[in-house]
Every structure is written in structure tokens, then in C-alpha cells.
Length: 68
Image (cartoon, rainbow, N blue to C red):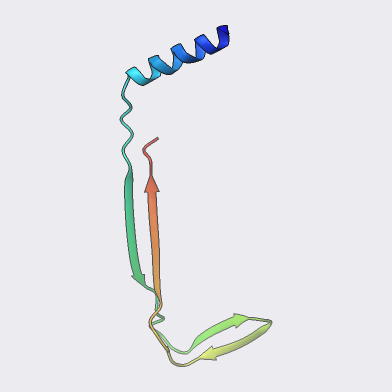
């Protein structure tokens, strides 16, 4: 019972002091399409070259920070 009272007191005292944590978010989109062709493509234990781009390659990233 004493542990429960201590937990309640700590919880109430902790809620009296406001925290100043702010959520920050950022997003970015970058074009990663190769500018110089041909491009060497490795994978599957093979090496090959590509001489044309079928569609643009976009890289997307999101960063989140809770301020803590």
C-alpha cells in the first residue's frame, strides 16, 4: 500500500511541472536519377550496364524528433 501511495504522489508531482518537448518533423524528396549513362548495375552475381532510364528515381525521407 505504501508503494501505491508513493507512486501516486510521484505521478501527481510529475504532472504539476509542464514539459517543453516539441515535436519536430521534416520531409525531403530528392531526384536520384543517374545523370551519366551507362550505369553499372551489380546484383544476382551478374554485372550489366544500363544505357537508358525508364522512369525517374525519387528518394523520399521523413525525420521525426520528439525533443527529448
